Image (cartoon, rainbow, N blue to C red; front, side, top):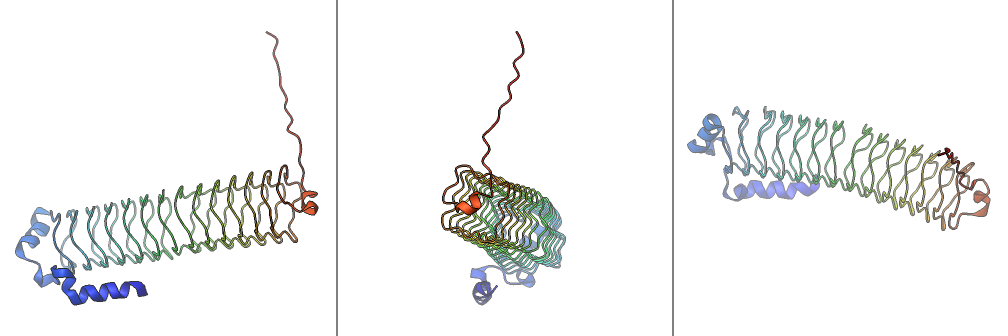
Length: 328
């Protein structure tokens, strides 16, 4: 939040670049557009206090609402498409099914707001405060959430396809089955997150904190996990085909029956990791630390630089084929 203070202070001093500054400054024409026609598209309301208005069904598409005050308002299905809400205060507002597509919400305050099934596609929520917000079922595809505060937010059935969640705080979130395909969570705090059966294919998780995360049966194919923290993470039966885990800290991680075909573990810390019956075929283990790791029954065919003592724990069965040919 410290990075937001200069912005908010500058807006306050400058009167938000000539826009309206308070409730009494809103002219009669704009008041009529809000209260009568319910059409305030492209309205200039920067810095305005709108808490005294009935705003249901009003269209604010393309409006300038920088620094505006909308706390606690009922904004169900309100249209904010393409609007500028930078540093606006929407704390505690009912924004269910509201349309924020392509809107600017940089540094906006949305703490405890209700955003169930809201449209936030391609929305800019960088450094926004979403603590405790209800985003169940929200559409967040292509959304920029870098540095956003999401602790305590509800995110069940939210869609994050190709979203930017760089450096976000999602620790202890319960997100089973969430779809984050193609998203970026580089440097994010995901400690203890429940990603069971989640779709994380191709996700950028470099440097992320996934200590004690639950990734049971998650799809992590081609995921980037270089330099990530995965201490004591549960990756049982997870799919890690082609995953890049170089230099990751995976001490004590549970990878029982995980499919890590062709994965790279170069320089990875795998001390005391459980790799029982995991598919490690064609994996790369150059300079990996495996002290105390258990590879009993793991498939180790064509692995590169796997220490012989650990290779001996594994197996490399030739494929067996059974063909039934019916008489013609």
